[in-house]
Length: 212
Image 1 (cartoon, rainbow, N blue to C red):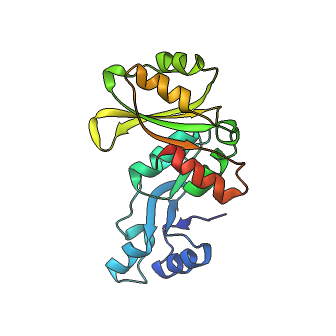
Image 2 (image 1 turned 180 degrees about the horizontal axis):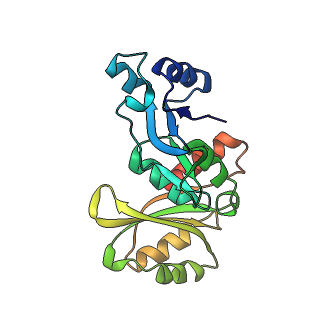
Image 3 (image 1 turned 90 degrees about the vertical axis):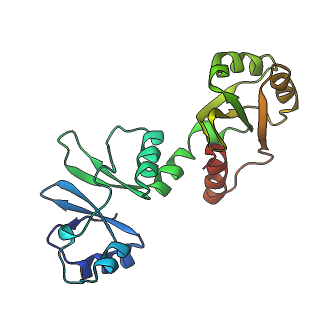
């Protein structure tokens, strides 16, 4: 729904399109090839409204994915480039479209791991102690299943991992007790007490789940 700018378009057109499509960045494409992204801030810093967009210091030249890229990788590319939009290229590396982080989160929020009722646990542990097989065994001993898991570096302690688990039970007390008995540190728990009523609720729950 958001069209790309041609390299020969001027900065004034870019500003108008940003206002029309309510976006902070627009892709710049020349002969099917992604040149990068331009923003209102980049244009204002140059202070030249008649300048061609391809002549600006564009950003996000590597902010692209391919047609078969997974949700997680789209979010990673966006985060690495600090952009809310990601270009989509085909097998010939030609520009085919644009996807926003909001679109990606909305789609991911429809997956079974998010939609199925359950609770969320966040664990902090040393790298050497991470074993999803062992943690899954402890969870299943309490007649529960891990629906999905996400592991990342602990932002408060780079030497540790932070593991976020979606579990198909609302009452996590017994599972927490079991994990703590085996030396795992539970630093957060979230109980989904009712069905998520609308898209905003699903996105909020998803962001909390991803710990973004």
